[in-house]
Image (cartoon, rainbow, N blue to C red):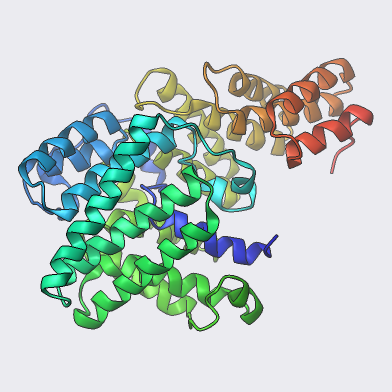
Length: 416
């Protein structure tokens, strides 16, 4: 297995290409009942028409079916525009990732994503994704055949390669293929910036790579096949900020990645302030609200984090968020309450996470393990054993969760 910091490099290939996994300021947790008008979309789109703007509005509010329908309308109007093809491709991928509970930034911040099984994909959906990916690349390459310095075509090809990175890594679990596609996206965007230094959207991928490569040792870069690349954390953060300020289609994703990196540098307040406007603009995005609560917790603002998790659970149960994985908010609420030694509240939250209909095993298994540990701390061994058995049955064989459950079935958990 590669060293953890090298794994972070591969994870970044997924994160910078994926639909938004953003954070936000606490003001966005008030639960506004209406989404913003498409005319107020906080970034430029291409084509710049009502259908595309409404499509992006649905996309960032996680109404993927609505976004797919609108982007399909655009594709019928502009069948040879690689930007339009990429929009539809991104929406289809996001829907599949959300369905499998894999639109969660925390999955890619450690090595948990390596334990995830390849999610089942409907063959018709897979064929559609493959067709769109090939079509976007073909259309961009055709334009580049006419004019190798066409920056829009280069950028469109970079986006298509970035989306292929997501598909290879998250859907198919082909890590080498994902790395190859990610590097292709980087080189395309780097070429764009050499031709047009102010092309802000291209700075997302280049800035991400600059930061990640700047964080790796020479040996780790060798293992990640980027030994010949130079990186700079400072330059990477600056490029990402420029991508945010450019107000292009990638500005929201740039906010996401910049916030994640700022949090990695322990600049939590900056991360929260940076992306507060994004959640305010797209208040129906459950992932946004979930990530801000996580950031508040990481920043040791535990009371605020607990309140944020509770608000997310409440809004989720009211149907405010489309297709929300509310079990994730309950699980994190349980962790936060456990940290505050509110054991009764913690086991209640873990129990709710376990029993949501169609809950993601990637959440329910660790929730059962955590609940078992709490019951052991409370001296209720019978309940603990039942939950360890449940965690073992839900977790992938050989995973950290499964091994911990086996260990605590043999010997009670006594605390860290």
